[in-house]
Amino acid sequence: MRNHCTYPSDSGCTARNAASPLRACFIPLIVCLVLALGGMAQAAANWPQRPITVYIPLGAGDSSDLFVRLITPHMEKFLGQPLVLVNKPGSGGAVAIAALSRAEPDGYTMSWANLPTLSILPQMRKLTYDETRLVYVATPLQYEYILYVSSKSPYTTLRELLDAARKDPQAIRYGTPGQGTTNHLGMAWLAAHEKAHMTNVPFEGNPKAISAVAGGHCEAVNTSVTASVSPYQAGLVRPLAVFSDFRVSMLPDTPTLKELGYNFSQYSCMGAVFPSGTPEDIRKRMEDAIRFAVEQPDVRQRAADTLHAKIVFRNGADYKRLCEDYRLIWGKVLKEVGLKREN
Image 1 (cartoon, helix red, strand yellow):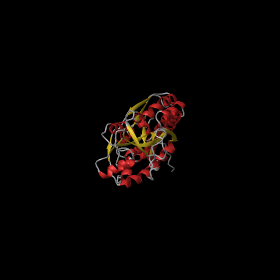
Image 2: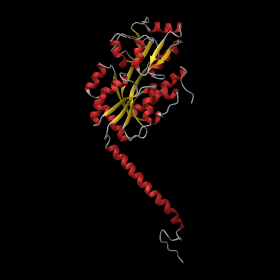
Image 3: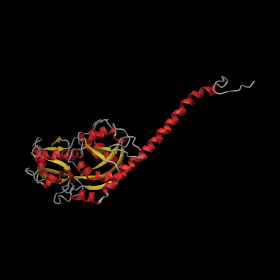
Image 4: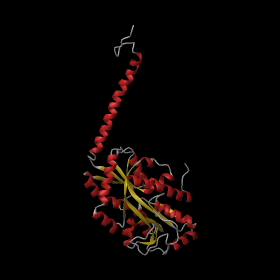
């Protein structure tokens, strides 16, 4: 006699009945997932609906801070919402990125970052964030670097500074915005190459490092052009060498390291990142906001004439690729100067 099944109570349908509770569980889960994804897509499409918190990894008056404040009004105009700027200096920029990594990936928390924070520091010590999982938005700016001493310093050339370092290991202290920054590693490379000892003194940002040199508390500082404009124009510091590939317009008579015979150059850039998991639509809109800002004539003029900054825009994919390339380049330097950590 054929068994007739009447779902769900008929005992003759054992297999079907066994699957039913699972099906009953999966259907609501699938519905919830679809609704959640639809909600995320809708949220991204309507973003932003409120102010966005933006971390700046260095202190007020530093290179990143000055440029961010220059382009922020144009980004706000493009996005239609305020950007709330919060300075979070410390640990070479790691403080800001660590805070960002704990934020919700909803597009309402972003951070600016310098290349060392994403490419160098993770190779020196374990951090609370995974830089490879961040969402890379764009980079609008490239930094060039200058080695300065106090205008009252007895050293008038790079050779004189290095000779003093070789004669007395305690003679030369140089200020930087933190251990593992390009400011630090450029000097560490130079010291290792010349077999001279120079002591790194970390500060919370370039302005404090420059002030320490101007005040006689450190002998030298390797800093960005942007951060050094005011102290140089005020006659507080004297340039000895350009660490980047080419001479800078503010210091036309200051030679580059390559012109002085070194096969070495140094540069960095500032970019924006979101927490892991931030939707692509949001990332792309923020990328477009940054592009819009740096295309404005007043931004380009002030960047060139006042900040002596070089605008080099790279989209999110190019920015991420640059950070990956930078890891390899500076990984070799870290190993050479004995600062690369063992995994």
